[in-house]
Amino acid sequence: MKSKIQFIVRHLYIVFGCFLYAFGICALLSPAHLTTGGVTGFVNVVNMIRPVPMGLLVMCINIPLLILSFIVLKWKFTLSTLFGTAVESLFLTLLQTYMTPYLPFTENTLLAGAVGGVLIGAGLGIIMKNGSSTGGTDIVMKLLHKKWRYLSGGTLHICIDVIVIAFFFIVKRDFDATVFALITIVISNTVYELVLYGRNTSKTVHIITDKPTEMTQALLAQCECGITVLEAKGAYTNQPKQVLLCVVRQNMFPILKDIIQECDNNAFVIVSTSSEIYGKGYKDYHDVL
Image (cartoon, rainbow, N blue to C red; front, side, top):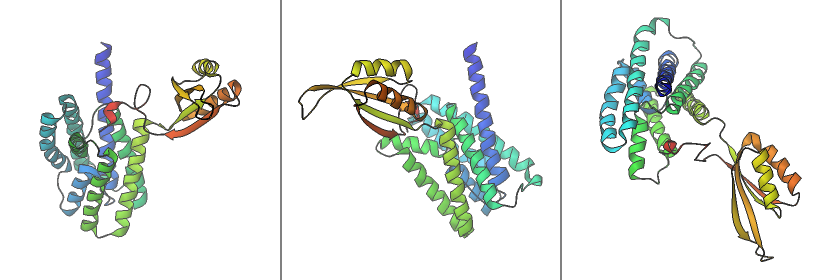
């Protein structure tokens, strides 16, 4: 029963995310003659050239990609993406059909781009966080990354966005509008990362101390972090050492510093900022393209 409720709630979140995404496109970006990245952004530019039913065109573009995804990628990802794509296309169709008489909401192009970017980023983040996607570039990136693992998902995403923005500039011949569209994409990507991962910046800390046992016990008791003990040897003294390796979230780092200072004021500490951490308590491996 609990799993059924979780399944329903997860899909309701996906529907809500699709609505935010479609609303940002139809109610804000399209009336302001702006666009975003990806397949939907491309369709939005096509709609500027000649009015088309955006939801239908998005679905038509995604159908061959979904078939390819079903053949090459995992069927669970394909079914989840099919659901997200279908709901997004439905909302695009409904909003484009019934909201037109009430538009535009604002004459300020920058405001429309900023608010639209927030809604699109939040919508995509909610969709991805609940295990779905809106197809299009998500499928393309997974297919490319399956063959060329060295390609960064972020790099592929940027390349596709650049292609869409270039197409937008060719159509509009408007430098200001192109800059506003770029600002919209930056805002949407920032909000997307924030919704999907939260403020996920963490600190990776190496602690070289003469009191490893005391330090480990204090950290485990007072700080929300796992600890790995590494065996090492001092090059100058040639004496064995233990290095404590731990990762803590940004908000826990001041507590960790206080514990280190209390346990061993002479400890040698190396701190680095980490934004890509996968595993329990951090990002899921399924987020890696």
